[in-house]
Image (cartoon, rainbow, N blue to C red; front, top):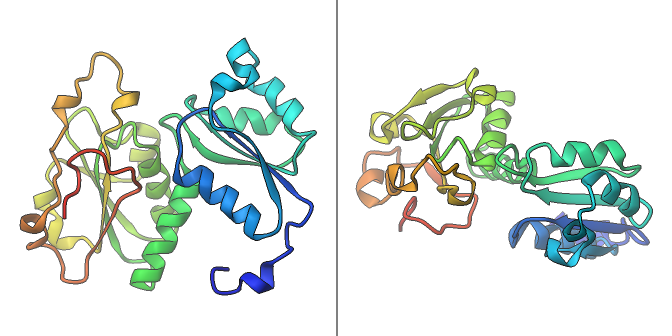
Length: 240
């Protein structure tokens, strides 16, 4: 589409996209608003839930019932796992999950899978290592399932207490040290520490800085290995 804007121009003319963002977002919200605009559609919605009726106690179900009358498509980001599923149950228009709590972030995974395909030419047979906070990192969960679906080998590398949740990890191999596998990896995916999602009993200090990917680490990597990060890059998980 990037190279064929004229072909797709007008594809969404007269269509309205509702962007319902109950959590902060830069890339996800703006990318959807940019996309609908480039297709000659329009967007409406909110990026601050305090300015919406949710601040008065309105439920996800009632919000869905209302917004479905104003739009042709809904993108929702919420801090509750399963929120997009609930909204889809009560909406008469398609709902896209823009991230639900620490559960999934499927649109980020699609971007990541496309990037791997573009850079490496395939996903099947590649070894992808996901590092960092894997218990609460929704982008990591969705990418792991996507890599598995397309035939890639996936290793997840995290500190104790930050491993992949069981609903993801049943298909994967867990490791504690990036150095143990760095030479095997075709793709190194570094996930940030999700400090805003940690329960009180878990200290971020237990994981902060555990998987710094720098020149010293990359000296042991494959020459053609690529490094990826879902952003924002706000901690020392990745350095130039």
